[in-house]
Amino acid sequence: MASNNNTRRISEVGLSDSEPSTQHLVYGVLHGISPPSSNFIDQHGSTAYDFGELEEALIPKVLQNDGDRKPLLGIHPPPTLEIFPSWPVRYQPTPRAHSHQSGESTTDSGSAQNTGSQLEPESPVSSSQKSQPNRRSSDPSLHQKQERSDMAPAPSDSTAHHHNQSKTLVDKAYVQQLESSKIKLTQLEQDLQRARAQGLFIAGAGGGSNVSSGAAIFDMEHARWIEENQRHMAELRAGLNAHLPDTDLRLILDGCLGHYDEIFRLKGIAAKADVFHVFSGLWLTPAERCFLWMGGFKPSELLKILVPQLEPLTEQQFIGICNLQQSSQQAEEALSQGLEALHQSLADTVVGGGSLGDPPNHHVTNYMAHMAIALARLANLESFVRQADNLRQQTLHQLRRILTVRQAVRCFLAIGEYYSRLRALSSLWASRPRESMITYGNSSQLTSSLQMIQQQPPHQNHFSTF
Amino acid sequence: MHYQTEAWGAYMAPRTAGTDPLERVERLAAENAVVIFSISSCCMCHAVKRLFCGMGVNPTVYELDEDPRGKEMEKALVRLLGSSQAVPAVFIGGKLIGPMDRVMASHINGSLVPLLKEAGALWL
Image (cartoon, rainbow over all chains, first blue to last red; front, top):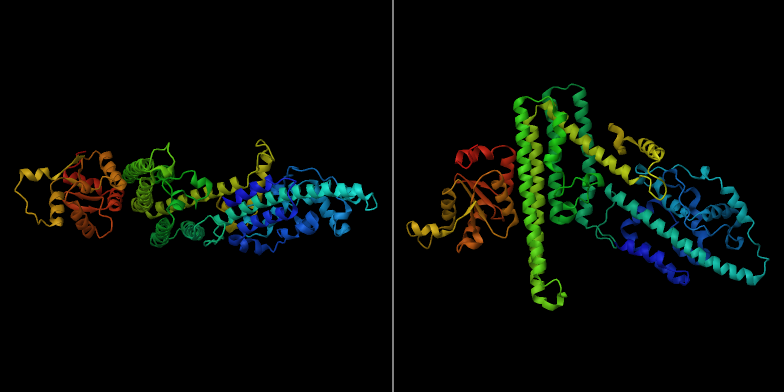
């Protein structure tokens, strides 16, 4: 990913780099990711990312917007560059006003991470993913730092000493700025990923975007589909609890099933536009992707989970379910073997383009011919995804046929709940404490993160159905 | 699974050169309980063959790319199936079941096995 490369480049820039080139580098990074995300950044009106001011007053000015930074999950970020015990008064445009913030900013460059996470409270997306308690109250060293920065050497010191000191400090300032930019960048990337998953990322073919428009559109549609599905689930549950007659329940159920048909239709369109996006499950949350089979769930696996939830079943129903399980397993096996054949023929074609020991330009015509054939083989992937989706769709419909109305309602509620929990698991995973900050033995952090998630608004809270 | 070639034709009445490909397809389809029209390089055809073999069925496979008149038969199948994909095309008991998705759908909804039994391809 381009942005990863830029991140790496930032950390590689040494102290010897001249000022303007560093600035351009950082600018380049920003511009590399800004077009698709410009809406996202603009939403928050944050000026903390205006690195153009770097030239003038370096860190103090840029970090002046760190008024209310909030760390991840209330954890103390690790100090990465403890090289600013104090900040000279000379470099503070408004010493009094900014010393407080500068003092904070110089305690540790992990504060830069806080700057990045400053986005969090304002973003409609990430507010559902992370909540950070205000760290300010928990920082006892604040006042001490502020005092220390006030005690920085006055301009009346010898100019030579001061000049040397200022030069070193300028260099150190750059290092810290680079550090903080890197952290901000990773933060931005994470936010973008999350926004995309939640369907707020409308990329088009934006510069620096590595998501095709077909994929981005599908991600958005999928997010909308999930919301709509929650609505169907709520309707089903309400209908069940209200003991509606079967005729009414059947209507709601048909609507629910039709909604599943809709996602398969959308997946078909998306597969035509970008088969690898669908096939690799990039539109799924990580926990769902764990179970990925040919661009979605494995029908026999889902049946295995559902059967215990469906009891009691009549003998005929049980036989029907068993047959369904067996036939879906056979169909899955057949498709998997077909895919294996595709792998084999694709590998043969790629190798056939010339001995792997030789460079490609050795047998150009042969190589290109085989590449053309390989392209055609790759295109077959779409038909496999389509057949797999067909299998999923047929399995759901057959399930509906075997079960009574009430059983089917409970069945589809169970399916909805299961995937809802998997998505919640993915959210938890994304906001889990990192190894560098915390040991996994500390369960209190997990508890607090669970509590934070529970405080989210219900429609975004996957735990609301628990 | 056994692969048929038109060698069988040598033992039967000589064919006229202008046999309608569709007729030929239907004739071939009627000769065995389970008939699959395939192309040797097609991976989905491989999948459908594996499906039947996995069920214990012994389908008769015609590889159209190995048949001198395969191209015409392909076109006839395209018209018959109403889709751009001629293969795989599955016939059971001489009746067209359809392309892969129809075969899978009928397997899932439980109608495939009775059809196979009826055609004598399955005995359990």
